[in-house]
Length: 214
Image (cartoon, rainbow, N blue to C red; front, side, top):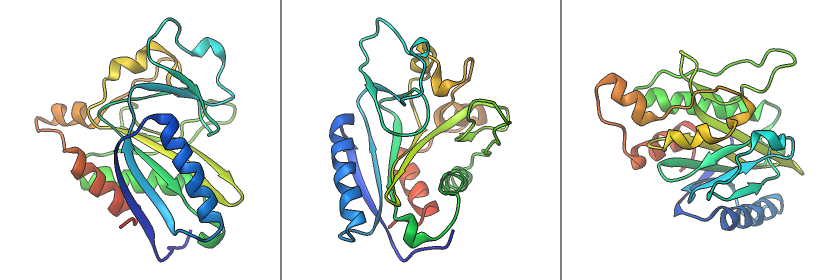
């Protein structure tokens, strides 16, 4: 996938999920019309569990106060909340040329983690298995979830990177459609290394650099 001239970085604070999706939908239409450049929006959400259309009802939690919201992206159920960096990517793939956009995002986030001092990897999905899309630690814990949609040549949705996320929330349902998956965070990985976790601004900057956003 060739480089493009510009990816616009948009830094936001905590945005309710429904508001963020409304804004993202508007950006997609404007990108398709050529009114804005490719865009990376960095933000966070109040606690919410989102799930794709292929998520079996048995994998969703019951009796929780956290809202459950159906979404039109790829992927299964996942948790969003404080301490997590959300990245929404609105990219015109027709201008970018052929390439695997999900792998491009995976590799960019792996580079961002390396810049922050953490070794991470991507994993190939065996035939017939549940998707292993995302960014993982070498010992098999999941750090970043990725779920995207492409419509009319323009992407939407994106990724969720755990910085100081409450990992207990992921144990209340089948996260990412992977029973028994262990989620992790940069804070947990940093503690294992005996050092402080990177700050959210540091993570935002590393991610933006790795994905070519400014």
